[in-house]
Image (cartoon, rainbow over all chains, first blue to last red; front, side, top):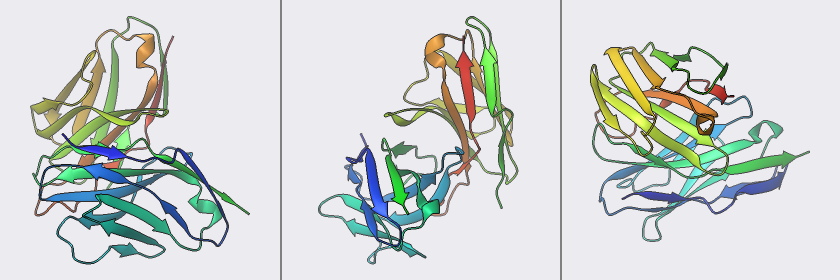
Length: 115
Length: 115
């Protein structure tokens, strides 16, 4: 069975600083994908970044990067130059390599950016 | 842009009522999902569908059923609503293949209160 653990229920960061949100996962599947989503207070879930288990390089999307350490089974999200609009809940999710594969989500981390 | 539309943002019903939550996507995605989100519990999968008239139970299907008669529409049904089904419900869709890097696209959510 797959499991995602996000150990930080809440995090604070000063505006313009970088922040790392932790995500560890557990799976016995050799091929899987890791996703991060953002959920502002308005409720919609927004896809941020993806990392495949066989990708050699860490994924980056603008101010978001993924610190992928396969041997440690961690996929931490790094947000650089935090902005007030980054205040939201962030979810890490994993899906194994089948077309109808279900995703497993972590419990989420609430990030608050301070001015 | 993919659009996933949930029929209501807020809904209040009474215990014992039969409740229908509707979800429509406009991108011809094969896979559709229903989640419930509760504080501290992340997103939990109720049901998903990988094709018209096909459905599969998720992690917490008890007390729920689903219907997918057309590809674009996935309905969640609370057969006899109870107060412990008060929650945020999220619908999502995702295309099938190739690869596993396609994220889920979410609706805005329905905040359901059962009185």
